[in-house]
Image 1 (cartoon, rainbow, N blue to C red):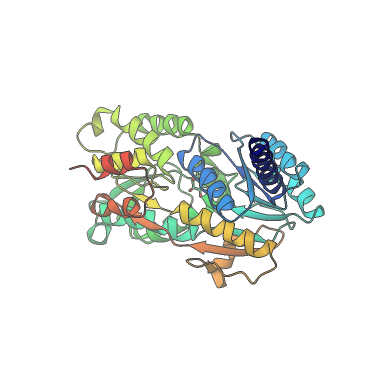
Image 2: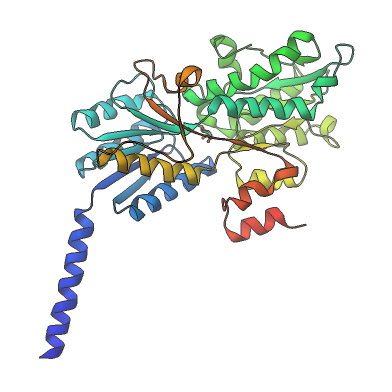
Length: 369
Ligand code: GAL
């Protein structure tokens, strides 16, 4: 008799747990792609923090196809999600965001603005203009531009991120805010297309990289090396993120001119493969954006908004003044919370490791003597 009672009790507890689990508020997490390492980590971190906060969470990756991501978001809405955390691919996401708004579902744009939409109120990201400034400063110091002369100019070629990604414009403008004064003085010369800022859309389009695809960057670098850069030795390449930086370095390593000395190549995301490249003296720098902290902050934001509480995000500032432009969707300026990026080179390579950004095996390989 006792045995039956015990079995019934266990079944009842399991059923109530299952019911409670199913009954938890659902947060839908839509990440753009997996061909850029960092988004896999972002999606998993967001799910972990959402579940820790007592929510049910489902994460999907859109394979850089907006139509696919839209179907994933629609499925979250059908399942009754009360909040969406969206790292979009392009402005094709607007239609499902409008649907979410009609259903009074909270939408948080995650590390990529949802452009041309007035149907959401929150964006959480990094100070993307500063990300670019750090990339520019990395070139400034690697080439010692402060002491360079027009008699012996340094040479740089420019790459930008995807023209479908609002961040790419801020990254580029931040970098050029550092480099343009040296170009004006003639101590730094641009090889290839030179948009002074992203406002020069025609030339920006010529240096942009659709959907951050590494093969596109590699082919473009190979073409530059055989044409515009054939008769000069490049001292630096402005690469907007690590995936593209590694592709550009691959192209340079295949060119005899750079066999013993690579140009200084920038990056972003502190991806493990690029940290090894930096350790090996190939990639010059990356920009560490602690996306574990970003994920935690995004879920805190969702939780506070869902509960109608005042929004306070430790470690993030509400963008204001010039920085508010980062949250301008083109239809409205949304509440934009900015976390701080950090430049990482060989000399401070432990910063992302000490932040716990890698697993133990990866951390050991980055820090091994
Ligand atoms: C951007 C993001 C960068 C980089 C890039 C490639 O939106 O801010 O950190 O990951 O996408 O996916």
